[in-house]
Image 1 (cartoon, helix red, strand yellow):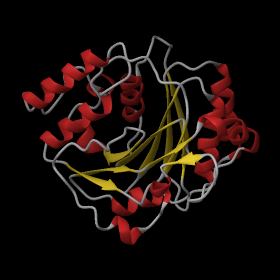
Image 2 (cartoon, helix red, strand yellow):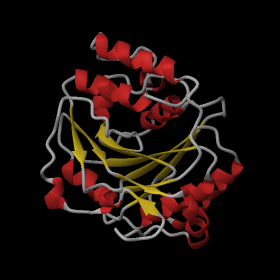
Image 3 (cartoon, rainbow, N blue to C red):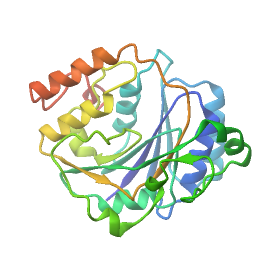
Image 4 (cartoon, one colour):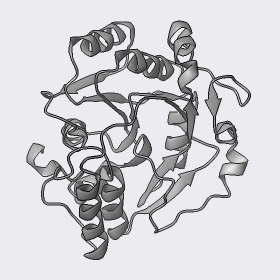
Length: 261
């Protein structure tokens, strides 16, 4: 099984640098790294280029012009450029636990997607975080909350079973799936512009196609760096798209990844 790590980013190179640093610390490395860039400036490119020069990983930087929040589009474009079997997805403001990739790979099964745990890094810790470039957090480390999510335990994680229902715990910053399943549903719905529901609507179509979800509680931990909330001006529109997908049991979206394949 060939695995791609997919990182979405937009104009926060300081955070992306820590994410990439945590990639070097992984117990298992991906076969490929896809950086889906929703229109960042040259500073982000310089951060990526520096990492590329220091790493022996295969890294692809997929960029398009900044035209508002078009995360669905850039994620589709990135996934279209890989032939890896399995996609592990996170955001460019989420530092990875050292076993993040290993946990996703170990628990990967056919007709199943995975979603992991998220520990929050607090606003008042950001100055220290970026000055020290810290990527290691214990249960009792300063600067974090939701500490119980930072307990890593395969034993405790084994009690969580797959489900065919959409979980409110799902976050697109920590999810993995088979590329073939993603292609079958036509990927992300690019009618969903702006923040909100783009990940859960995609997962609803996976569920409608018989792909079950499993929560990786106590496993696949990430550390989400605090930031101001993005605009939710299109949330109601995106929510209606998702409700239509649920109500009509849609298997595919029309405006998806197929245009890039």
